Image 1 (cartoon, one colour):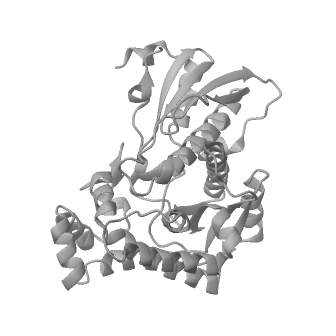
Image 2: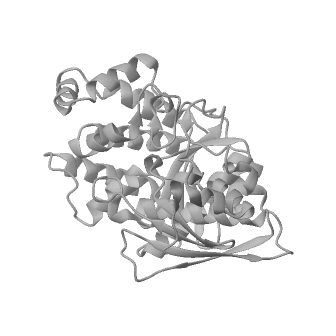
Image 3: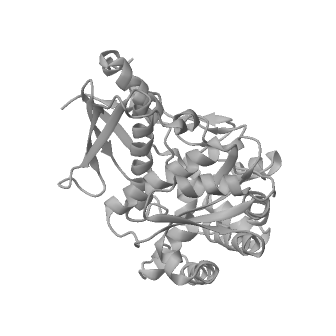
Length: 363
């Protein structure tokens, strides 16, 4: 065991043990902890922009850092500790670094969302189509901090959101830049995974999953299946269209001010985590749907994301769909999107690296 684990103060160890359950794209867990003393540490973040087409400018990873901070603050409240954080502005954007301090606060109530930290997970399978109740919506809306609001996509708009996700899935499954990511983040023949996504959590049936494993070993196989055998159809139906229809609603978290700086995305990650934990506390399941927002920003900023002909034009059409659904202003200010509904918790899920593997020696 890492020697640092033995030196950890018991309270700080419990806080970090909960904090590591914060969500991150593809279970990358883009953080490491440098413990300074019993109540101070440094979070060393990183992103995957250099090899992951989805991590545009590192913003999704920055949202994960925000989710980590919110989870840490919630966990600390159960020990009557207030968390304060300061980002080191002299560190590179792809290596965000933050100083964290926990201060005694005897009057601080324990955040009830702490109980949802470890049970929160991604549910990629079908959910109940029962509409969210007024109580559930009120709790979710109230969970958002100032500066954020939620747009619900229900009824006919749920169908439009499903079409958007179905089209977006074809974009993701037909370009080599995304294939490289998918091939690296799936752990095959697994119900759980500490550092990736287990294949049983993808949402496809066993036969489709086995076929996907064989096809994804080689990009030429992927191209052949996509061209001649409608290779994307079964995965898109099972992992995108059916779940997108089988839910209570889709939702979009919209920032009052369009996010631009790293701190905006970190703050958005904190808002996202409070919303998600509240959904879990309400007995609801959730699946993120971030990629339409990511590719739409590629389009708006006229940035090429694929060398494959036709991908940019396909993304432009999907971006117009999203803007038509939400309105251009809200679409550009959206920070998070997902589907939500009542249902059973996922039977297969991503776990986390053990805390000892996330600890760095003090500098």
